[in-house]
Image (cartoon, rainbow, N blue to C red; front, side):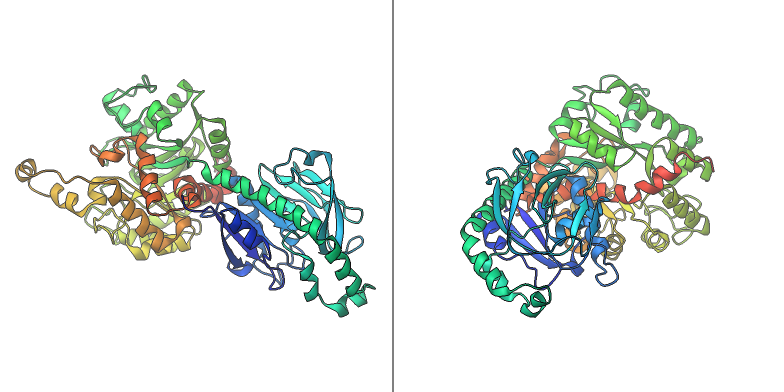
Length: 580
């Protein structure tokens, strides 16, 4: 198994990771160090995050402009339950990111070796368990956390600084002291600055050296505990948030919209409850699709939205309607399948923004701009160009979608429409079920320049399993005349070919901008190893064999699309109850 990955963020050249690097590597972890200016705002691709010190306040954004991004990183790590360790400034960032209070030049500065005392709630804390009730640490601060965030657990304090350690959420910790620093760190301190504070460096160094054996043992135990949390987190199998499942359409066509027998077995379909569980699908976009030639597309779409609501109501112990990323996370933790709504094809709104707003009130979180045919305002990938992309009306619709927090889905649209939508978009866009044109130049796939622009805007390409999108050989076979096609063997598409698209998308867009959208029950044939919704683990096994790290698999499976949802949740929640 690839070693769990830890991201360590430096906020100052003099506040590096120190001895933690060798200790974490001894614990079997792989550490990536980056400066704050280059740090991501999301933990996707990493199994843990360490935020290091810096010598300034966590909201000093004018002088340190990366701090807002680092606070977002702290918030998202807590939301995703990614293990996080904040040290000194890093702990203050964790508190400030969650509405705690940090005051500068507050109280008595702590310099050199000081004693920290554990509080009762530390007894069963996974980071601090096994440490003595009091132990020496290196301190170097004059700022303090004075009010902890709501819900934080206070774990340790000292005489001069009451908040020395706290836990927030399941596995995020903030420390005021410096486990990364040994007594030798004091040799780099500014003696003149200490003199101005009325302190003498030499006695501070002597005391730190005297306490070093006990301080090192305590710090090493703390890091061993943190590493155990990280390994446990990394060993958790990824849960999938799939971007596109057409079961509502399949039930409408083949079951007269009945939601019976979802508990399976249902071999006539790709999807049933037991196979969703087997595939570790923790969240699903159920898609309302109607034919482009449907004479009443709005009504037909509403019927499928109603079908999804009825399906959820019929299985309350297994399914829950999810309006936002928080709902998805909570539902997955409960062991239920978070159910989100998508609409496939802009024709479904009947060119009426009131319908679009009504869909939002019913829980629709994305809409694909076209299907196989153009809409009057957007060109499809598989139709003759009408607008050479988006018309002015199309741009208006995209803007209204983003105002409503409905994700703009660019699967099925032409490359010109992709670019026009990206020109308009101020929030991330998605492709709910597409693959890479550089691997197979099918018109339904995404060119690299579009993929790069999608990533730059924070969006996600959700890779699909449709054979002709994955394999050029299968696509060529599908275009043969029917008689020739019947005579020729259908090319077998493999999970390895799907993984080729996933890896190409990661190379172009980055690990934070890819996801999965299988298109189950929307295509007749799938790769044998991905034949139904139980097949996702086969893809993860293939990627593990290609040395994908656990955090990368989690990002692909659900982390990235959850981030996009979270980025648009405020707009969605603000607008879905509005009447205008």
